[in-house]
Image (cartoon, rainbow, N blue to C red; front, side, top):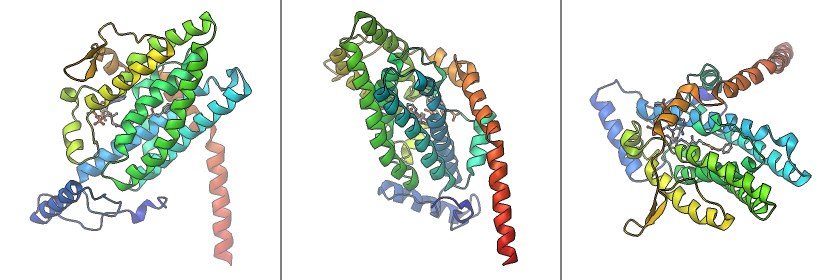
Length: 331
Ligand code: FAQ
């Protein structure tokens, strides 16, 4: 459906800065204000297209790179049941990356270009995947907190103005919901286990809580893309609103597990009707997204290696296509 990007060009062309372009832009915003989806062949401002390619490609890269931390535990899962669940989850993340790359391709940028940008370090992916998965409890905590944060964001994205992105999100959210539940169920099991298992659970949450809050991006005041993306309804809720929703939902879930969240400032604010929470270490966040997190180099190197190891598959596929094209020409 999305394979041939050559047919996905805008229908109307207007000179930049011309009255025709201003008219097209007014109609475009009116559609968005009326909650009508923008589709691949509709006219759209170049900046809207560029913002979507940036966000969607970063999102797809996050899904693909996000397979790595959990992937390292597949061979170490403690039972066949846990191994099957983990394998299914990691495969799902790969599938999510593919849907989102396909969605982004409808905007006229090829998958190869997007992946090149990932390999050369030009494109970002979610900061969270630059932290290592150090214990088996991390398999539960990633499901509970990382998939939990991803769903909080993605439920809002399922209502985004760009049709192919919003529709991909509907299916992805269903799968992420299973991911979140399997993680929480794993943690419930640990919470009922030995003291060693309970300690492993608490240690994992202590490590991953703050990086999970960073997934929502900088505070609204420091988020350069938010205002425009909200106007275009690419983003339906702000970074801080989503982060607050996530904190509010997590507190009760932590209590049920019998653990604490590593934030002395976390307390219910009657007036706001929300939990107050402590200041995020923004220096750490910016350091990680600049490429200096604990695993940035390892993650990108693995992506590069997978691409290089797959060279023979691409060569074989090209040879096969050429052979068939030659046969068709001869017929
Ligand atoms: N990490 O102005 P804003 C998952 C960048 S999927 C890295 O606020 P925006 C599933 C941002 O790109 C998780 N960079 O930007 C899973 C921008 O940089 P640029 C991924 C970040 O786009 C689970 C700059 O900072 N989900 O987990 C981060 O309006 C388990 C300024 O920021 C998505 O990608 C960050 N955390 O809002 C898989 C959802 N935050 O491009 C495996 C789609 C910000 O100017 C296992 N994305 N930056 O160089 C979004 O909703 C948005 O892009 C935000 C950022 C909210 C992430």
